[in-house]
Length: 304
Image 1 (tube, rainbow, N blue to C red):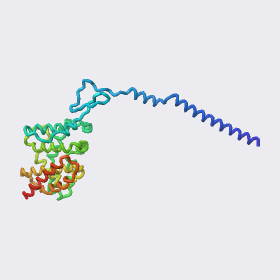
Image 2 (tube, rainbow, N blue to C red; image 1 turned 90 degrees about the vertical axis):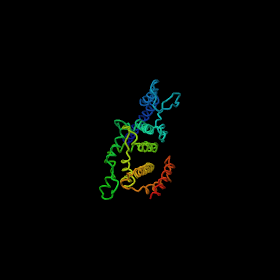
Image 3 (spheres, one colour; image 1 turned 60 degrees about the horizontal axis):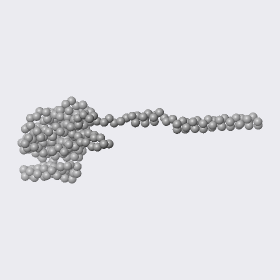
Image 4 (cartoon, one colour; image 1 turned 30 degrees about the horizontal axis):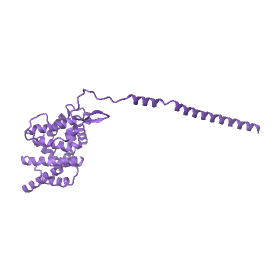
């Protein structure tokens, strides 16, 4: 019995010593943290105090399009070239239609060249050269407009037309432009259509060339083929409606110039788009489009 009692006493003593050590370590850790901040905290606070926003240089030139706002009693330059481009007029100056339309296009190109997502592609020559080159590629490689369903190979070629002609990288750039410039795409398409109407009168070789013969092929492609319509149905509703609208205007121009070589009937696209566009809500100039389509519907009703 005495041996058992001695063992129990020894075990109890060991347990008490361990508890004292644990409590002492906890108190020491607590008071040490209270008196000595962690190095990470010191480093963060120090760097936060030392870092300051460098003020703009006094003699630095302002942005081409900028407005000034007061922030902490200091004037800061805020680029608003996009806002100014959105407000660009869409009417052609009758005194010099070529110059006024070119200025509108150049305003868009300058805006595009200033966007970070476009600059990331590092395109030599900027957006104007990019659009000029893809316009040439598309003009020299037209899609199939008629007899598309005669064989499966033609349907597949039309379905992959832009990828075959422009390549994957250019397709990616165009999709980025459509995504990032959604708010100004309606105005931009109006400017490009105006330029296409003046193509034969304006001789500036720096601008993209948009001859009616080439545009006619693509208007027929989008309105009259499975491949073209499959492209449109993968785009946003507003892009699809605007593309179809300008394709109809191009086809009407082809009829006026007697170059509708494939005999594409314009009446069904007009009536189909009218039904869709009258109930749409996302187009700024919807009423103007409806009026123009109504006039074309009456025109071709009399002709046929």
